[in-house]
Length: 69
Image (cartoon, rainbow, N blue to C red; front, side):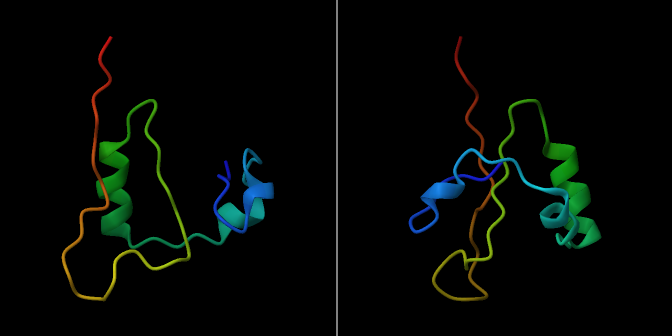
């Protein structure tokens, strides 16, 4: 599902079409690691934008918050 980001608010809530999904290419090791971490309710954000300020620096892009009943 698309989320509304600045400049793309009109995309919010629209489902991803199969053509978009088929363009995704992930390194096998990354895919396997993410797949093992997935649980119901997991959210994964995929973006074409850079994450972080410069390349080569460690950056945590996965985090978890366990919901409290």
